[in-house]
Image 1 (cartoon, rainbow, N blue to C red):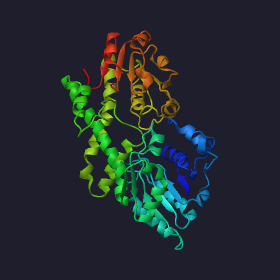
Image 2 (tube, rainbow, N blue to C red):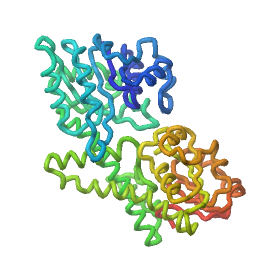
Image 3 (spheres, rainbow, N blue to C red):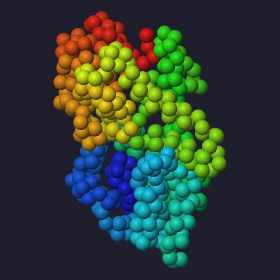
Length: 434
């Protein structure tokens, strides 16, 4: 069986390498020639742990990348992995890349092939794409469409590709299900749960999961706001309610909130799609989930202003630029948003992140980017811990205290040792913690 992967961004590149690891001949297609060249040289165009060795292992040995869509002609299964960013001037998803990819594929689809959507799309998209394919292909060419949503976590994408915690197959018949079971035979053999459903349900799974996670994060951040005005400790609160097996402790870490290329745009697009379907009231709560999340960033800026009196001319060190550790992704990053807001308010901001600074500099070129955490911290009047890289937790508060102009630590992730910082003479400020 030969496989094509259309779109070699974060999802597509990892999926292509993963399919090669499973033993398939794979061709990845992208319109970005520089990205294709990097992939063919065995280098991912982004940082993701364990992905470069996997790519390098297979590229040129059953795995190749190209800008020529004609090279998919021999493939039996085509995975559509292009992005669906937030539309300009709207909360809805931009479907331009999905639609153009399908249109570009159609002339090269052979009889009996299967097109599999993995992109996160508004519910109802798959049926429209199936009709689009049927109308545009000759009567002698029969092509099926299925939906197989992705559940990759940045930082764990290789693991999630090769050892998924579940597989969802949105299909219209047994043939598509059989092909997908063959593709994922190894994972299924390892007892990965498989949910076989219709197309609209499969489309809803990813956005429903992300909406639930976003709601859980915003809930504990709302509790942090209550803790701030009552003197309660949100970390202890989360521990207590997390012991309830109906709730669980995961994703109950209060802080500066979520970001990245999925959760923020997915909940907005989901809410927008519900309104289009006449069911906007059902997801109205997601607007408040989004508002709470964005408010956390403002809270950190306000805390710096509160402790320093003014932001103009004050020296602030920001530890972190990526939206999460083990990633160089700065899309909708709380850390970078806070750094940018401080800079626009007149602060002198020095940022350090182990992996994300090149991407951050493309968005905020006027920020200062340090070569290390200690360089960023030097002479700072406030230090902000905003991305939970392990190296930031390993900083010795007594040692770095000698380098700063003012011992103020604002822990936007509530993960540093509060007692150790206070014993070293720091003013430690957590979010929702006394």
